[in-house]
Image (cartoon, rainbow, N blue to C red):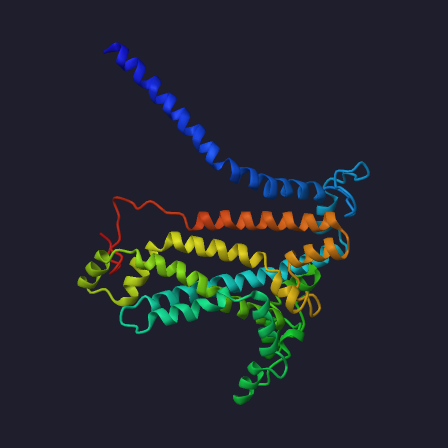
Length: 362
């Protein structure tokens, strides 16, 4: 019995090592591909961001010098045009994220709830119709949007029917919030907002809101991405059990109470996925800007991704372009971690529980 007990663990450990080796052999092709085409380019870009590479020859050639954090200082505190352009791009993109992510998440959840209803006829048609814009080329959608929102486009034609003169959407650089303040007579900034700046942009301009041109891009983003996130919410809704819902109905809970206190908490993992994907996608917006306005008018649609492209490929400032990309990476990671903390599961106290359907504490 003693000999058997000593040999069995050895045999199991040998089998375990064999399984581990087999696992590494199976995943090694993927690891090699990711290393060559993802890890190595990222490390090269990191070196470029701290060097004075001009784009000619190898970035590891003898003539390429190490400049440290100079490219990052030019962006974050250099007091030059590079700092102001980066500040404007962050301002534009921040408003884009603030408006697109909540709206597209709410619209996607609403569409998922609607097409998940058993009483709805033709649910397959509506699912396909809502999802279709998501699989259409972003370049094609942008060209269509330019046509719809032109001065004589269909959107302004519809607005004219209700007595509203539509703006020249993609040529209007005025901020939406500034326009709203002008309606109530506020046209000049307070001294506090005008005299203080962040990244070369005054606080008054930070609070201008998205420009009219960027607002059109915000509408386009909601239109094209809500269908994809609708499918994620729809899959999650169809996996929910009906026992709790039936119990809540027996307790007299209304439809809104069941959704807010039962359905929505169970969608927390899917909600985190949707918000994370939306956050990453909105901070990386590029092709719509490149196809549509190329940062105009007056740099009010300039984004960090497009600024990184123009800095590297247009102005041949490869170090600055790489630095912008890494600053954007840090912003995305930080916001994702913050979002994870906010949406994390919290332990429920054993001494105090809440009846979700009625709000009565027990």
